[in-house]
Image: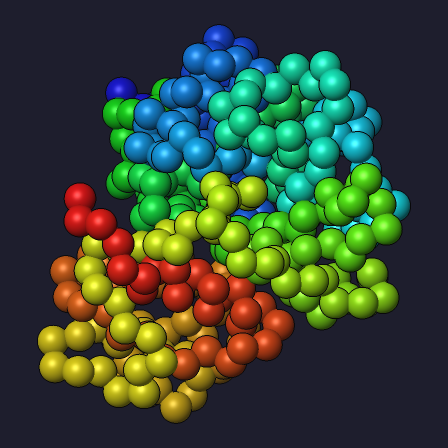
Length: 322
């Protein structure tokens, strides 16, 4: 049975004890709820893959409490140091080259020589990291490929009975996964960071700090270098149609902006991209609960709209049945 822990000192302490014993705890972050386990323990990390039915070739993000812990695991290029100073703690993940003797389970990195690191900003996540005293692997706390969870209720709907506990911190503020940048480059320096996944930090903010826009990833048939890069991901059970200016008969329509007054659900009636990002997965969960096919109104391809559209395209992509 999955315990629901209160967002207080006792709940934080209980979460740390479970994690120290190799268990699984869903934690709120500013992006989405993450399914946390000791990133150094093979058995604990394997439990994440088992609970989520996640492909083992898909790497995990490691969450840390502070920069000293991050530098102990990976080599930071000057660009990575600049980005970390600007956006950590916060919704940015950096892919970096592992240091010798890092101590992480190879399941975390999917056998790669790189690791994805993040310092979350959510006070409960930070409190658990401090109480636990080590790195936590924490992908989104949902069945693999399905809609990401932004409330404890979403976590329980997908993983109840499969994990030890969920720390209920209420709705997630950003509501969209972290932006992922590859900062490995040749010899870890001198190369423009590559945007692997748009997310909670818009490209415009990254460009302002870096002095140039992040590069786009080259097409590759290799295994993913970071989470959230599979073609089909974040998917509801029902079919999803994009850029729908009106719904077809039998569809539930998700609107965006004031031109969709008849939409049953809306990402943002005012057309606010920050509000839409925070609402995205909550609204997708609500639409999926109707059992109807889903149509989504167009969302502008700018700012956080790029990350929203990235998630929607992956949610609508063809996928295997089951």
